[in-house]
Length: 44
Image (cartoon, rainbow, N blue to C red; front, side, top):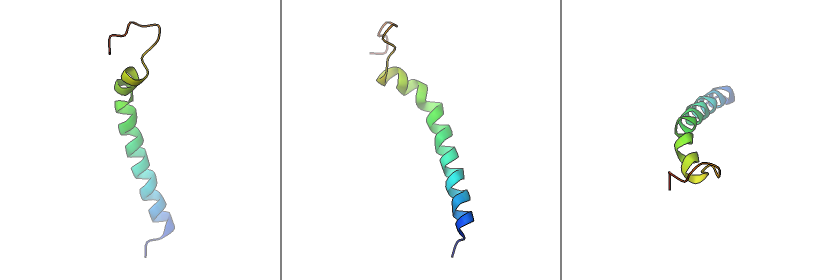
């Protein structure tokens, strides 16, 4: 049986890894899904 502290540490480590991956790929998707209304639509 795993102790709750060990499981929480594993979840936090995985969440941090996924957050880092999301932030690394976020700008690309933000430009496509939420283009700047002021800038020309060069991503469309």
